[in-house]
Length: 388
Image (cartoon, rainbow, N blue to C red; front, side, top):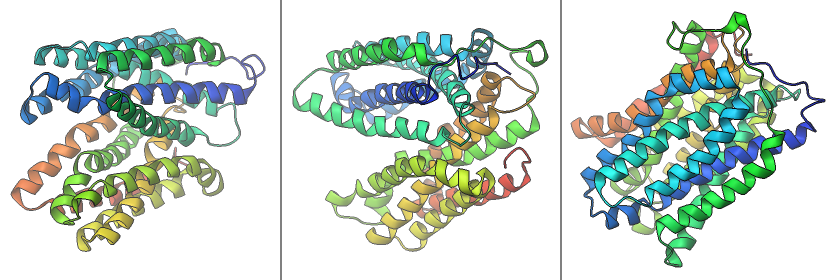
């Protein structure tokens, strides 16, 4: 396991926590800034919906193909060094998106954005696990809460830039400048890893631990649910709930607000009830919310249902990462890469799966299938001894 400097040497632990949280926030801000300008870039490049959809796949593809490499780099050089370099490069990759003048330019830029973003993701979550080890209580969910808050902030900044008629390239450079300032101020408070011990060296591609695969499947179910809400909640409210046009975004907003809120209260619940109980309840909430939305597709009930789903997914991925990072047999960077690889497939496969089922039957059936994922989460959590 990557070892860390004792708390007495790494400054005040609350300052460490703030620094790590700000790195999560900066990564979320950069991603949300890109998302806020997708319509403008689509128009500027004269892309059809199908062309944009194909190009957008380049980003998760870049993330997925470098999972193992990112884990290896974090394990070899330490998460602090990798995070500082990757975070600085991440916003440069963001600015490249604003330079695209052709479809293939955007695809290449998104692929690079995904590669560097994945390095940030593995490194920052390894830092999150290390920071949590400085405390006698769970704090991982609050770090992911910082990422969620950054999503709202990035969307608001994007709206401001659009209204001020600031082009995406300049907008992205403004974000880059802010992120670099944060890196300069906070990098010295990150926890310095000294690399793996001889007992934890593993090949880049090796047989994963069984518990890590199970954690990955739990993450898969949660991220597939998140993908379903991100990509299809608006369509569900429009086509199934038959919500008035002005209320169509309400489903997505209710989900996001409760997911962010759940991440800030999740650590307290975990400290009081334990990770296993919270994860099992989370699975129940996901299933309950999805099934309510399917059985009672009306505005009020669907909003309440999506709120339950938001609470359900809030702590699953942070908790899974926290448990994976404590695996006694595998270095944190490698363990997180393994779990992230399986989990992220949910993000990739969940939304298309919904589309296929909706095409064959109905979007309500698609959401019912996602509801089953919550049951799977609760069942798997009961079997994993590492979750306490």
